[in-house]
Length: 287
Image (cartoon, rainbow, N blue to C red; front, top):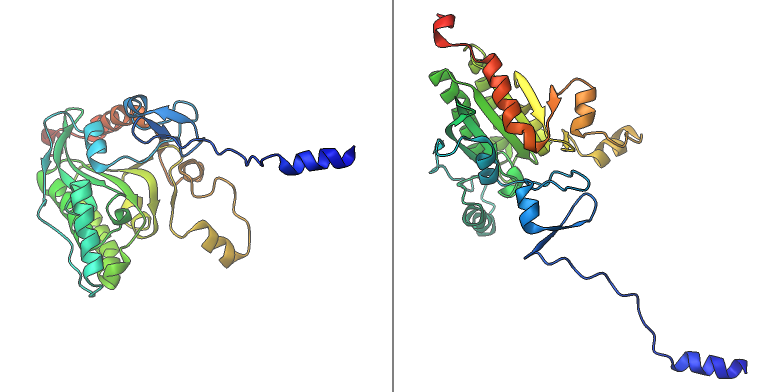
């Protein structure tokens, strides 16, 4: 009898484990935090925040502009500044730059200009991770400097939204120079009685986190944003210790005094408007 059952089992077709169907990108988005399938119109209506776990997904610079700027007030600066290939990485790198420009609608990794935010005129810069990982090269550094200098000249607040993997390796020392240049521009802005506000988003790391992003008069961050200088695994291998679970998160930075507040995306504009309203002193008072 046992032989009969063994024979039947051998002839029975093997059924492999059925994989879960992939979420269609046309109508659904899979949450990077909890894996929940989210209906795309709902996802966009909720500003790319998961209703279930509140994971904040990355936004493009144009989406953040729509979130922060008062409608119809934005005037772009320096749209003609584009990166070259100063170290001769070759045509492949130039092709990638061109592809990023076409895909993002940006000249480089930072969208900059002037606008009104909650009725207050500001100089605004927004980084986009979709353009070479938001890396800071000569053009991004120059645009950051011009945002800060434009704010100083017009005596209006500067607001910078950071989202970057750090310095652009294809520009070598020219890229690293931008850390010093942007810090110097912040120092010059500090001589003018206008606030400088930074909004850190996921990720804000390396050369950007270690330069102008850390120098705001007020520093806000979105929930769950990765913030730090070196990568977690690099640090663990260097110090030969395990790091805390929430290390390099915006909440960890807030607990240790490096941030002023963690703000959900839905409340970001009203929070920034309220802060600028308190910090902006009318011109006649400063004379």
